[in-house]
Image (cartoon, rainbow, N blue to C red):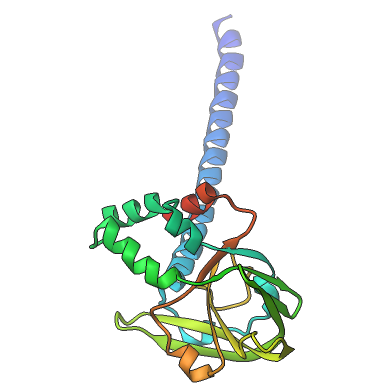
Length: 225
């Protein structure tokens, strides 16, 4: 009778072992797939981060439309003056080579502007000041690549006024750490009537975030980088 009982027990054990092996293989396969997915995601993030820092090849640059900057945008300069961005300055001081006060002074110059709001709808750009607003219709005038002292680079996407108010600048130049079509989450804007002169501006870069964001949300965005 003994062999009669050993055979089914052995079969069950074998099936169990096969099941465990199959489960282990499936788990390993899933882990491997997740590893590959994570690996690919890391490469994409790393590439985007390099572009954000200003390291890219010319053939990565592609033309962009004004639609990338559509929306209602607020200047961050009033937030800086009100002290709302103090946590950002403290964060930069903790990771940089200047004090919070030195960073604040640097951004005071960089963010400085009396255009507190910009709205972009189609090809129409409206600048809002406390004293009133002015607007113009703009069309793409290509892009320019700038090389900075550190060796990294930036791309200015340029638009020229086709018609509009006399107060509206002839040229506007966007810089948002992107080099190909993609919706902006914030941007630096340079403007004026002389294309080359505007392109040479490197110390004043009025910066705009979506008008719907609160000061705390903007602080969170800024300290995430």
